[in-house]
Length: 143
Image 1 (cartoon, rainbow, N blue to C red):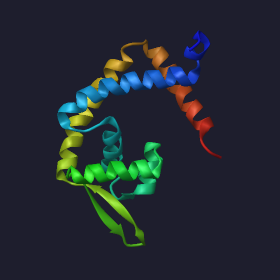
Image 2 (image 1 turned 180 degrees about the vertical axis):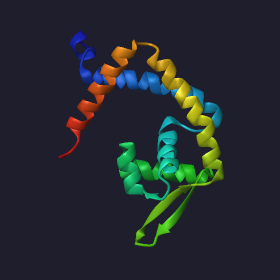
Image 3 (image 1 turned 90 degrees about the vertical axis):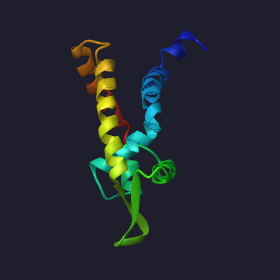
């Protein structure tokens, strides 16, 4: 791999994401949940009654991946699924009490993790980074 390849935006974004995600994953181990599962559970709790397609859109994941994560969360007893009365092919997803309890515990852990990550650079750089990443992501959205 050349130095130019190591400086590519894709490599920098990917390697940084993996490092931050791996650190968060290590903290989540005691709760038996992965960052990917946490992300889906977050949206399930934030917007109860969404269907799988909506969850996939919010979480920036494809539908098959979202379905697999929902199956795991269901097996762990963190969510419940109900058939959508308006579309019998779809189901709506709700957190159950165990899911809500886990969300409270892990949400505090995630906030602490984010705070530690943001302390690694100045507040001004953090604001710039956030703006740039939001701009890049919005320009990459399908038209």
